[in-house]
Amino acid sequence: MNFRRLALALAALCITAAPALRAATVTSEPWGKTQDGTAVDLYTITDKNIEVKIATYGARIISLSVPDKDGKMADVVLGAPDLNGYVRFGAPPYAGASIGRFANRIAGGQFTLNGKTYTTPKNNGPNTLHGGNGGFDRKVWTAKPTKDGVTMSLTSPDGDMGFPGNLAVSVDFAVHEQKGSPALTITYTASTDKPTVINFTNHSYFNLGDPATPVFDDIARIDADKYTPVNASAIPTGTNDPVAGTPFDFRTAHAIGQNIPDRGYDHNWVLNAHKPNVAVAEVSDPHTGRDVQVFTDQPGLQFYVPKSPAPPPQAAANPNFRPRPSTNAFTLETQHFPDSPNQPSFPSTELDPGKPFHSTTTFLFTVKK
Image (tube, rainbow, N blue to C red; front, top):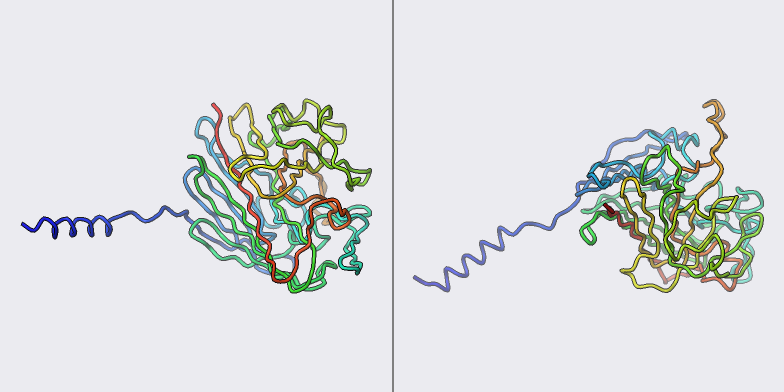
């Protein structure tokens, strides 16, 4: 018998029979139309111990289900059950959306770039918030399924909400296993044909337990020695102050409600230098055992926990009503610092032609028994 020929044949058989790399299941379905008649689709990404639903309206996470300590799957982000809940502002503002062109605030709705002053909509008192009243959260994106999720793409024309440059942006959502636990990675890419400013984030409201229960008992940790204090209209004062001795010190994990200020948390933490495989923040629910860890290459993290309850529901006949989110959620918005275009000491948010932007944030969901 020709053992060499037999060995080669067996090797070829093994190669042929080798299993393909595991991929997530990605499906889509129509999800209604916006008020101007634009069709919206809903994509469902399913993999081991994770299911994510993402709508093309706002490149928005609608739901994100992961197991608790008993293996029970449940949605851990707040939102609305249908498109109308977002279009008519029934969901918490910006819930689950991809934010742009500029996440967080721009003071006075103005910034100067290369000697030219640009004006953006004032939709948050005297300031611009999350790109203005026609930001990326209100736009219908183009979707393309991938083996692990979906990529949402958008072209923002020169002058959109006052920002310069034709901006091509994509947000890729991919599920995978990391350290044996389910994870969602969000990758942002962008390019422009003239100098502009950008700041992207995802605005999911997390509740790792009972969505009807405040998150004040959740245990949080943020790897930051400093934060950016703000004035009365939530604009940074321009300094990076130590968290030591303040309610903003989450270097040692403790309950969110332990030292929460009267106004709650809506601040940017200046993340310490870290390795890509080291979590910059972590929040755990002591009742369900669910835990979320954040990995990012961004310099800041906006941790948002309102302290006051949301106002009572308003009549559906009032389309301009925008409820504040309740105390039942927190955000983990990886970002550059607020008002960076007007703050020379902050990391730059300028994007120039020929120098594409690329950033990655991962949310890793584990269980603590």
